[in-house]
Length: 380
Image (cartoon, rainbow, N blue to C red; front, side):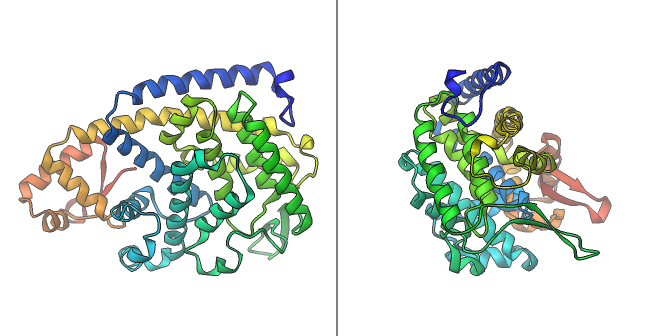
């Protein structure tokens, strides 16, 4: 097809039909969001953002739950500025377990990177390598070991290696671009291609898939490429000339669905390239990745209904039930006992028990154990 000329691969009729159907679904979901108040939209956006950040870090094996990410996010939002992690760092690390320290740092950095993407996506047109380096610096700014390579392209090889922990044998799973001139040239070509194609090609998701896959194959940074790459997919949506897709992108958590299909995700990346960086992008099988991401996007759009239901359910709660829910949200690292909640909320036992039952019935919290061992924790 002539319309595929700016891509490195052709879009067949079946793919175009799926892209068109997804566009219609995005329009439908936006129609559900449009009547909401600014405060309600802000609430939906936070639910999506927390899911996005939490899933993106867990895909890379960080171990915080979405509930813990929500607590960190809410704590930082109180200051209404991005760079407040240091102010609350001791409080956060003291509140969450010590063995999760890198996870906390990764979530704080990933949150900052996503904040910039959500708030400044349109300002990053045209995209520059300086912007990409800046996003990488935001991502890893709280991880001490990354200080010497923040925002810098790799200077040593970073091929993906699989280690057999029994035999200690190593196997290269993905051979990335060599550091130095090859990586630098590949990134320069990629950014130039994206700026030319994104502004002219009608199907944003197809462009985003080629852009992100080529970025991942290059693996330009020493660490954090997966999280930056998935952030760039979101950036592509928010920069889209399709106003519906650009707006809906604020309310979907794409990485939440990638996390659900994590094994397939890595298998797809392997199949697209044969496990190695290729200097000629036309040799990649982008359509495999595109089909996967179409499925992921379709499921992410379904999450809009999930977030709307959570918002409506929360709004329908009594004042005391909302207070109990806030208490449980404030302690995501714990499974709270009834006495803990009574102590924190200063509510009568009978009121707390009634509220807990209402929250369980609404699907907002979960109950673990029985009798004296009963604990409560948020559901996300």
